[in-house]
Amino acid sequence: MEAPPPFSPYAEIAPVAADSSARVSIFGWCAAYARLVSVLLLLCIAAICTLSFPFISRSLRLGVICRWCRAVLAALQLQIALEGQEKGVTGLLVANHISWLDPVVLCAIWPSPFVAKSECVRWPVVGFIMRQCDAVFVTRASARSSVVLCQAIAQRFKSDPKSQRLALFPEGTTTTGTNVLPFSSAAFAGAIACDLPIHPIALYYRSQASPSAAPYAFIGDDALLCSLMRIAKSGAGTVYVAKLPMIDAGTFDDRKLLSSFARQCVADAVCASRDR
Image 1 (cartoon, rainbow, N blue to C red):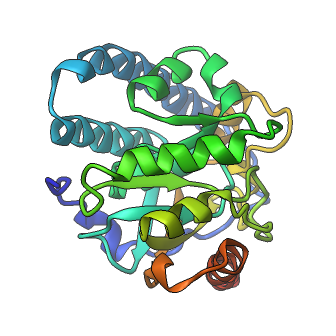
Image 2: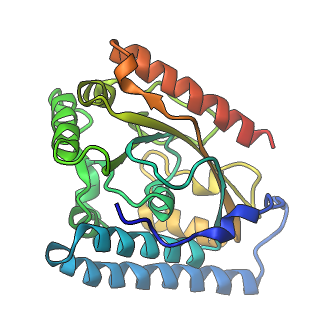
């Protein structure tokens, strides 16, 4: 797999100081709207660029996705503080889920398709971009969702398992980042069947507006545009990404035991990031 372009700036990022009492000034509102417009323009550019995806190589597609994700994070003034391995990561990437920005953050470091809820297909522009990027859509309430996910994993990795990646969020929903919900074991059954390496990843956000991940959390019936405006208004921020040691799925016979072990690894790292 062709390596994504270097992303050295995040290596030396210091935590962002919180200022929850600060009120948004006129300048702050102008800056927030500028960030919002920048992201909307980037979405339009992505929709146009992804039209070429069926006609270009996989490595070139991943390069385009990686650069676009980094541009979105730059527009929102959200910097990455990465702990752990960056290169040579293949297999299943499993992370806790806080925001719609989570796949953007992961793809800025390890560009790959990801698993998303079926409702995302109906999002204007974003749904089209996700389809063009080979996202795997799963209906959470469906009894067949586990079968569909296992089939998608097998299909993704059967041709070249050593150079493929797939990212997913096995909590099945978003949280405020204060805790990590139990992981669904469906995806881990596919990982055991394909003998895949599993890479647990812990995510946690902080902004100038809040020491918690609240401005970035995408919970319940929150509208995408409202969430985007809230993030833009929160100012510069940092997302802490902890790439934890790889788990060999082939050493586990029980998918529930594997999912529980991966969840505990992520939960411990989230607690460490939250308590900084």
